Every structure is written in structure tokens, then in C-alpha cells.
Amino acid sequence: VSLVDLLWYLPIAVATALAVGAAGRDGVREGVRGSVRAFWTLLLVVGGVGIAIRALVLLLV
Amino acid sequence: VTPTDLPAEPDRPATPAAREDVAAAAAEVVPPAADERPSAPPSAVASAPGEETAPLDPEPRTPWRESAGLAAFLGWLVPGLGHLWLRRPGKALHYFLVVGGAWALGMALADGAAISFSRHPVWLAAQAWLAGPTVAAAWLLADGPSARVPLFEVGQLYVAVASLLNVVAVADAVGLAETLVARRLLRAGAGGFDREERPPLVLPPALAGARPRNAVEDEWPPPPVPPPEVATP
Image (tube, rainbow over all chains, first blue to last red):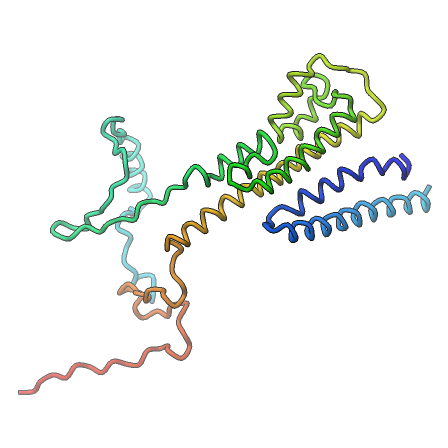
């Protein structure tokens, strides 16, 4: 799996952020704000885990 | 207050043997026949003979339009349908496009072979959370292509994640329904009482000397009541 292959998972990440961000919020602006926050959280978590795994592979293998 | 000062529980037998007797007697109680059972809760309770009956508040019934269970069921069938039932068309369209779009994109990436009860039974644990499209696809595409396309795994993951995202949509619909019910009850004045309107605490006689947990420091202990004057002859 290359980094380019991870781009295939970008749409589902956006969909996840849109669904989670809109949950529990009534207004459109609140929903958009929650979606953006959820997307950044998702990106940081997934990207952080990916970078950590890459670093471990480079260090240990 | 010591335990001996407290009144004994009248309904609880004191000894284990007596409790067993009570349990055996309760097991022998025959439930009333169906035609003898009350069909509706009583509207009033008589506290004692000769006393006036105290009317009971009827249990507030949730109308169909605000039923959380029905909204969850509809949302489980089709994404966004629960919100549409609760008269939130904007949010219904949002979830339909997001969840349904991700699901459809996954099916397209997997060339329609992402859902199969026989070939991929494990994935049904996730796909079952979106019942309508999953059942429809499994039925319509039962004889579909079995050869895996290059992006089959990606498409299968899309379908599974979209189905799991429907759980978020259903939970949101349930929360929305509960909010609607709470708002209606507040409008109807059944929202309980505020702290200032709380009725005064009445202690049973056995606990009259105990300090209540919500007692204010300045007001406790209460000032002593002077003894009644006895008239001397």
C-alpha cells in the first residue's frame, strides 16, 4: 500500500466527518463546523498512526 | 437515629424461613384471567375508605410523529428516513446523501459484489446496520459478478463504513425524537418543578432528629421550640 493508495479512503473519511459532525447539531453552520472538526480529528489520528507505523518500520526493519 | 429507632418494614418478613414461606405463597398465586385484567390504568386511587380519591396524572403518551423507536426503525431501513419522519427534511437529505452516497460509491467500486450472504458473511455484521439497501442488493445481485475487481476491498470497506455510519444517523434521529418529546412536555407544563418550587422536605417521625442532606448550614439545627406553658391552678 502506497501513500497514493490512501487517497482512495479520502472520500469515506469526508463522509464519516460529515455524518459524525452533523450528529447532535441542529443548525447548518454548527453542522459544518462539527464536520470540519471531525475531519481534522480523523486526519490527525489516521495520519499520526500512519506516520508512527512508518517510523517504526524505518527504525526497526 | 439508630437502626432500632427506625420503623420495621411491614412487607418484609424478618427471618429467612418466613421469607421462604412468602416466596412459596407468591409462587402459588394464580394470575387473573385475561378478561379479568384491567384494560386501562385506574384514573384515581382511593387512599382510604371515606377519603376523597386523588386523581392520577395520565402517563404522557408519545405520539407516533415523535416516536423514537419508529424513527430508529425507519432510519435503519433507509438512511435519513427517520429524520424525515420527525419532520427534519434537511437533515434527512443530508444523511441520505452522505450515507447513501458512500454506500453507492462502495458498491460501484466493488462492481456490485460487496454484499453477498454466501461469499462474504463476516461483512454482514457491519452491513446489517443499513437494512434496506443491503437486503435489496443481496436479493437483486445474488447472481452478480463474483470475480474481484482491483478496488473490491476498497468498495467493500466503503459499504461497511457507510452502514456503520447509519448507526450515527439512527442515534441522531433517536436523540432528535427525545428532544421533541421533551420540548412538548415543557410546553405542556409537565417539565417538573424548579429548585425554588420544590416542595418542603417532610421527614418521617423516626428521622425527625436526623439532619437532611440538603439542609442549609445556617438553618440547622432549627431553633428550639419553647415548651407549651402549662396552666397552673
